[in-house]
Image (tube, rainbow, N blue to C red; front, side, top):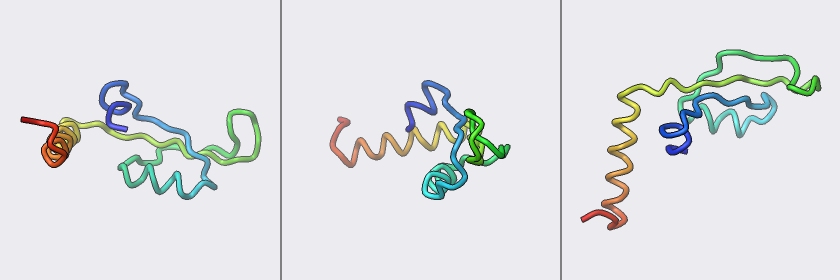
Length: 78
């Protein structure tokens, strides 16, 4: 997930509103809903939540620190 966010800048997702597990997953990653549609891209009656993550400098620093600490814990750094 970090690679997608930090390297590919994939900071937006469309989530089926009825898929509460997916909504909770992205909310836990600090994505926020900025728009709701009544239908999906194919015109079917599946409401979508458009969610976005603001990748701030603080977010990048926290992720870098967490990744580094995880590497130490796994013995991947010298």
